[in-house]
Image (cartoon, rainbow, N blue to C red; front, side, top):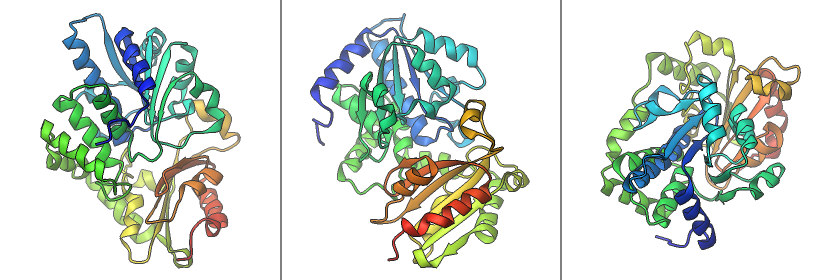
Length: 363
């Protein structure tokens, strides 16, 4: 496996930062998914083991997420100790304020972590960013103040965390390996997209050698849904899926009223965007769902009363990240991207229909 993945000068800086830091906070993005949790917890387990070996009991490493994570990730080792900013704001603000090193995983824009991002920027301490999304020019000043490990070609932030740990000469315990494997698995749809990289499977083999039970991880993530979620999936496919044959695309839109009907919980929409791609001659898929506007989004929302969360998926040489960036304030990978829209789901769908012909290939 490639040993010079990261520049040596950055590794030197990171080694020094990790050796000197006493209070480390690890942050990841809003609505944390498997890769967010996997990269953050993988880094925490590694650092906790590193510092316990050094017998330095005065060190602390905490993971803070802006809001709650899905129930199907609650089994992950260390998840019960993750501090949820929305629920424990005072404690989270104190930890961010007192941190002498902040590590950001799976995001590169402070706005991706809401109010926690504002608190983070108020702390002048050193920061390390480990991410695989396309950089935004608007955050160039912030990136210049960080040790930036940004690799959009990487399938997941969790893989980058693995590479960083190994590049530092570190070892992985089972908890760290399980977290990293979970992140890699979920951000590639169980290795069904962005996963045609030989080195990825060398990493997976190493994680299994550490002791990861890949079958148990799959079962915990993909076979732990509620009956309401299954009914929601059926409703999406039977009632809500719209096929757009002129561009081999599918669109699914859900209002807040429809979500309420199926007692929607965080994580229930996971994977729905991938399902239309199982249809012959469907190469693009878009999933939209209405959501409430968070307090920190009020200014950006303007007069809108709701926002829409949007996911894109595609197959082959058919990028969707440009569409997400240009019209839905988002971005991501060529075959897996996301965005948002302030307004109703009907308005978001109208925007999609007005522009998708310019971005989706005919063949």
